[in-house]
Image (tube, rainbow over all chains, first blue to last red; front, side, top):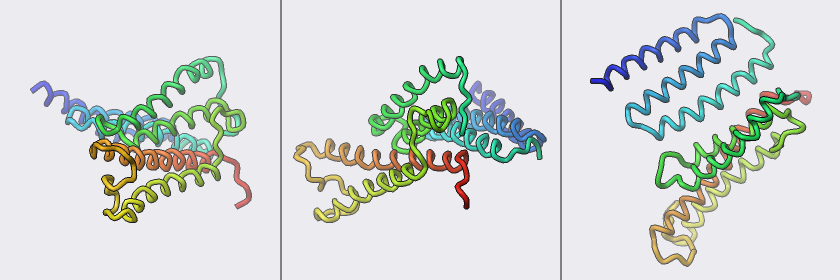
Length: 80
Length: 146
């Protein structure tokens, strides 16, 4: 039961950060929210008992955030 | 990054964080048979160490300064290592990646399997690490006249 409540909270946070990352105007804020989305996905994978997938997602979340910010630095455009 | 984000706080945290990340990457690679992790995750961790050194110290003065061309060549070498181990077992009379046929004088077959798996994981690690570094180099480097 506790696990179910925790999963529900994490799922709501996951969907909330995802929708906010799509809706927000500032691109840097969008990238940071995408990092938060990735982190909640990591926690969900861990709770569901897939530590291997969670590990991969954590590492790839960091790398993709760095890539997005590097591309944003080259784009020279703050918002969409 | 042409010019890094260097400052006192970033340099101090770099000295603590990056050696830990690199050692953890090697641990994940070597310990991959028994625990979560393996070639892909270890390669991504090692690449994160290299990318952090580039972000903080800049492209020219970076501690682990691997350019895009060299990175692509090393990625190819990693793939070639995988293929070499895979096809060498075919030439020794087995199937693709049949580790039991490897020509090492180890009596325990399980140990031979672990050895072969370590070999192909080193190949995967090299390929993933250098591909990530090459993508980062393409994203942040200067354009050399397309």
